[in-house]
Image 1 (cartoon, helix red, strand yellow):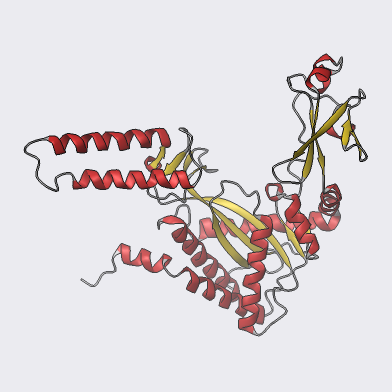
Image 2 (tube, one colour):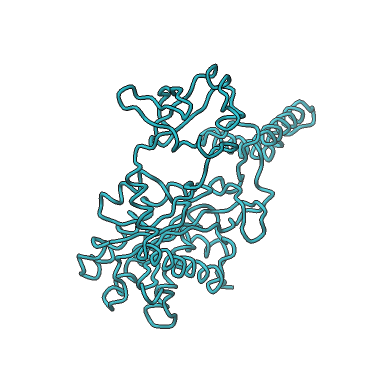
Length: 384
């Protein structure tokens, strides 16, 4: 009848991600030629989009192992039956092989606990919390970089992580590469080389990545989401900032005069760990104010890049930094609202991370074309 099959349409939408990315760069080049894309002030944001898989496709490791064992037992029972015909267990063997492949995928991802889960039909889309319903469902983490001066969407990406931690510098770098490609297409070599600022919410705060951005002369407006965090039940006067550091002995001294010895680095290599003696801490009269629940002695971290954290915090709280944060909320969050609501993206229609990336690119291209032809007004902060 000449009708396009759904599978054919889905394959067309997701199998040419590189071609879509090139097309997106061409649209950005057109925006730059028209003077609508300075590419100097970037804003990074992320959101969760539900995957095409259903909630029933998400299974825990212990249940997956039980299902594999049940299938294998059924296969053995059928093979031992005298009336069994050759190939009669093919369907069960296919099911077992598919579940075994999912189990091996979990092993490759380091998901070895019984409570770890995987989405059978989309391993790249683990269950994530949805803001709309508050429940959990297979979903993709969509990252987006916008230009706060023009309102254009510069870059979109799909990442496996459930949160935005560690995405600031990678997404900023990818956006710069896209701008450079758009500049090559448009004959504007400066495009992508003049990024001045990048703004993001506190979930993106990463000390080492902020250091890398500063080394590129990119000013970051990113609040520290852990700034006000402190050890539970620790009273004022016994916070980490109340401990003093001795560089000669590489020790920390607590307010009571006891020494904490060097224990190594934290996971991110951004702070040095120190620990007090269990015997000394347990006998200390200030234990109830300092470490009431600890049985192994007080732990304290000494930041290694405090000057970078202080510089970023100072800029973020400055009038210019506050303006950048307000511009981020206007542009980045507004653009997400447009592609989710006006461009109808409550849920992915194609499978896998590649499908989600293609759907994001289609909407990015549509959004930027509508800006280019003047059909949509750019979502920008006027004073920015």
